[in-house]
Image (cartoon, rainbow, N blue to C red; front, side, top):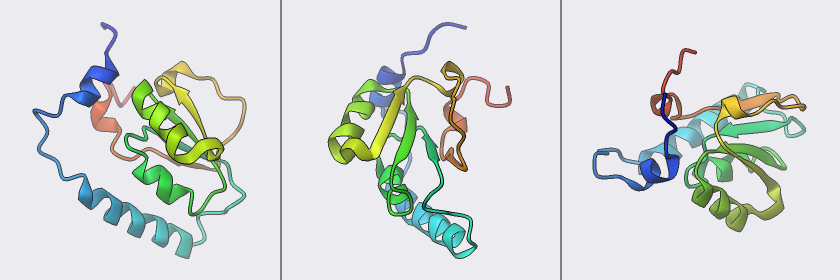
Length: 121
């Protein structure tokens, strides 16, 4: 399979008919519900896969002191560091590129599967 240029894909919005504004509302509800059920612990290690503009990262930082992120687009990585500084650790690449030493109690993979070449694998 040829190497994908995630940067170019992220910049090309001509074929998208998607309302990003609703995401923050749905994600906020989702996280509040998880917290109500006791599923989010502030001392847990948190991993977010695919951060895009950091809107979910911002919400996760309400529950966790820091968030590790896997983000394939370097421009998005740079913006995450600008927005959140040392509250984030951003790994540039895709999930299959990494062998993590640390364990994560909470992993968030939201709106990512539709971007993967072979999500089942």
